[in-house]
Length: 251
Image (tube, helix red, strand yellow):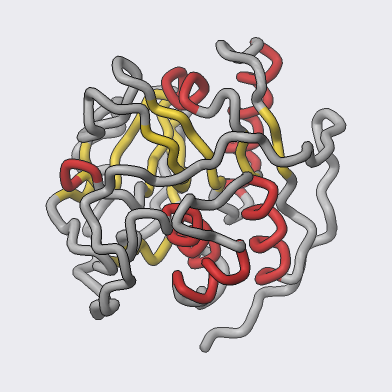
């Protein structure tokens, strides 16, 4: 087990924020083709040679096809003049409602040897209805890292305001540059979905942002649902900003 890194002091925020009360709607990862109970976790999969070798345009798949529940693979972080990605231990969610624990685990893996999805599900209070609110993720991230780095950011406006978009981009860049992935709670309706999502259903979900490209204005997503076999892919920042409302993110 690796030791925790030295906790960072709470960072100065660009704007004041507060953790809002839980939203009434749950954030369940419905319709994922996974068993109702946790599947055995497999050993680490192959190391990804490069998350940048196919380019960083929106829709570019970095890893696909390894969608068995619990499948793990290592993603190497890389850096160019415009792009930065983080080194993480990716794992497909083990049940249809553990997207919150799986996304949290991916984020923690950038800094520590993370707990299992089952342990994180217990910490998050995840049920078969999912993980209720992004604030639960924020608390669990900070508790496991021994830090106050993460804060809950709400995006209640749909579409989001320009100020909310600007803050989201700044948070992604700041967090990734400092070695912290961002966990986002999203709502993906028909007509506005990441690659492979069921086109006729609205998906309530959590995934992890593990990189960005400033030139392309894209973000690298580690998606534990593996819809359509898509695990790691580039998504336009503009689309990400429209997927989060009325939920929020931990950054």
